[in-house]
Amino acid sequence: HFLVYVDDLLLTGNNKKFLYDFQTTLSMKFSLKTLDTLSHFLGIEFFPTKVGLFITQHHYVLDLLSLYRMQDSKPISTPMSTSSSLISP
Image 1 (cartoon, rainbow, N blue to C red):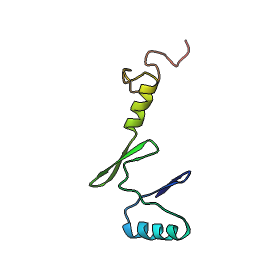
Image 2 (cartoon, rainbow, N blue to C red):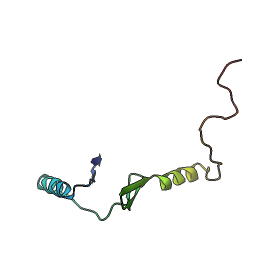
Image 3 (spheres, rainbow, N blue to C red):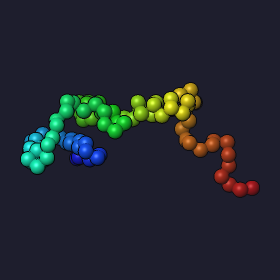
Image 4 (tube, one colour):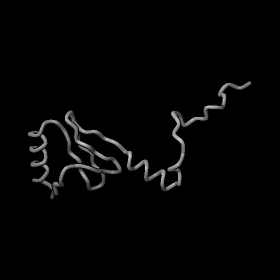
């Protein structure tokens, strides 16, 4: 898999040889900079686990709640009103 955003490229997968070969081929045409272990990308957090990557936007959501002063809002299982009826009388 790979994700491109403006001039950032994120390569990931479980075939290390393919990733290495793909990166080598790209580096022949483009100037590349390889960064350290992935932790954040476009508001998404990545945590390596034994079976792969755990992906979350927890920090991004907390930032949004803080921005709109909603960090003390009560959680609800649905964004719709639970007291309104959708059926007309």
